[in-house]
Length: 262
Image (tube, rainbow, N blue to C red; front, side, top):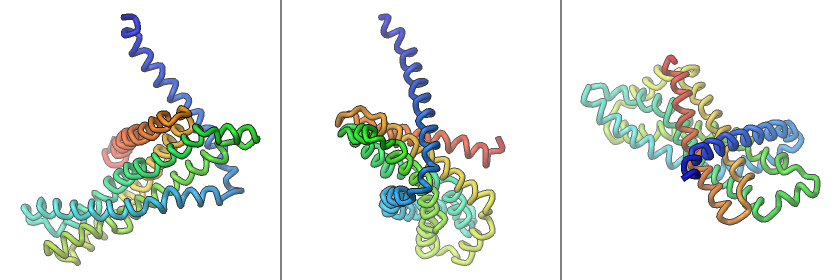
């Protein structure tokens, strides 16, 4: 009975302890970042593993999201005789919201889980302990390059998803080529209504925040995983779940600050 009554306090204590550990861990990572200037190859290698290998899922997802948005947007706008505004609807939806958020969720599922599993496996096989015994700091050698690579790759992937017209092009194929919206109106509406500071820059800021959050969670979960197969599995799962919730929560806060007038 006593254990049941104390359970909420234990959960709250574990949560506060985990937050404190993750903040201290982030401080270690940030202190290690300047040292990467002398070893850029570590970051470039991780950018390939995290960013380039995620391109396929980003491009395919962007195209499908754009096509669905084009179809749904046209179906709604045509009832009001405003189908010429399809370009504005698609561009603002993708640049402001869908591009950064969906890219971050895909990034957490593909790259975040891979980073957590890789570092967790190093923990389970005592590679991290071996580095420490050889006076090699695992945070500087393993964690910091992956964190920085994730932080840099996330806005680039979001740009490919939306600004590089993967999503917008998908909507163009459905709205213009299939449903007959005027091509000139589609592109001119995008050019006239999408503002760099109001829309594109805010989307980039969102992507940077999501990239930092997902990379931080992935390296923390992997580094502190229990040194067993089950521990690595739990760390990978926690990375995806926590990252997804944090991305959605951050999106609400940032959207409120940027577009909600809060």
